View 1 (tube, rainbow, N blue to C red):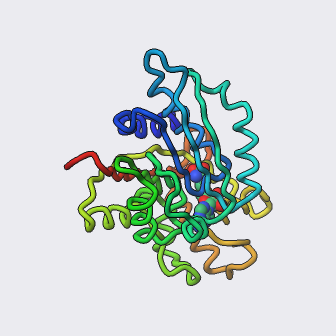
View 2 (tube, rainbow, N blue to C red):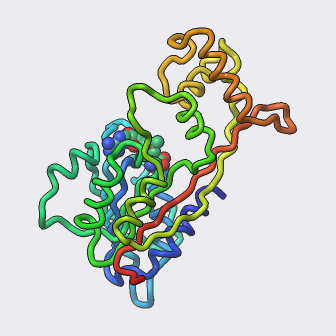
Length: 267
Ligand SMILES: C[S@@+](CC[C@H](N)C(=O)[O-])C[C@H]1O[C@@H](n2cnc3c(N)ncnc32)[C@H](O)[C@@H]1O
């Protein structure tokens, strides 16, 4: 269900793009689960009569080489996943998006879709969107960013417990601000929602729980590094943000939203 919604979101807008090749650039791909779902959606657009399948270039920019390798492995059997014949060429770029921009050639290929799925957090939003709009997209194209929606407890956590190391935490509202300031056409859509079982974070002996607590809090070794009082406040925060389900598990709902910036689609 979760993946399907993302796919529909993309499909709804991409079907109006070029009638020749589709070129896709994904930033911060991780292990590719979401990228593959987007590819699947793109591959349902065609073939039109007489066409074998949609030719597609997917440029993947991901600095974590281990994650990139896992994504690459998944693509070896990718054709089995598609309902229609697909013809996807991958370009694997093991670097940050900032490094990628700095070495980009002026005559490089243009893309139809550039997406940031939970990766906008690691870039300077205005610079990067401007770069994508002007240099990565061709005459017509879309930029998609999916990130936590404002009421998402992970964002609330960052507001309540600011991280001294990080001045600000980019989010979709920053993408909206850039788009409206520049007069770009954009839409904001509700994203999917995940119910995450956080029961184990309250068990100090649970290895999984301690990893999960670090992930939720965006900190390392929370239980070791925080003093008793702050640890209690952090756990109290997660207790308040969660509910107990019918199986007695403590659940937190993490909801996303999406910003889609459209270039060349008129106003
Ligand atoms: C939260 S994960 C999201 C992964 C994937 N897009 C998904 O939706 O499952 C963020 C990814 O962004 C990558 N990343 C971190 N900093 C980055 C940067 N400066 N440029 C590009 N990717 C970056 C991380 O290595 C990580 O794989």
